[in-house]
Length: 137
Image (cartoon, rainbow, N blue to C red; front, side):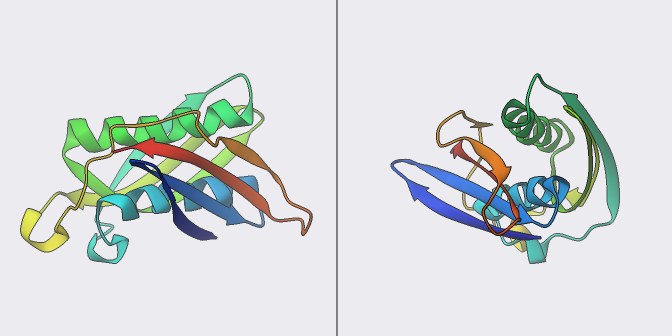
């Protein structure tokens, strides 16, 4: 699984890639975390289950990232590790993380939501999966 961010006007693009669709979704989640703080600063001491469904894989990516944003906001947590299972257009995942510690995590931004801007999910010419969108910060 690989992840990266990319610039987009006032917001930030997040991108995950991997040998499976699930790996690409996990990478996109890690990229989203990196917009907030360094994922390496987040202990994976608490597990949270996330489930969502959508009519297609593009909308599933947006729903997945927005579900994580909801969990971060309501639990006051950050996540650093993700195990994702995708069956058709249904996603079940475990996200591991810990409560926010301002001093240690040093959050740089708040992600407000995943958008449809630059939304793309699919298999690339090299066989790897790509999952990306822009998040509102």
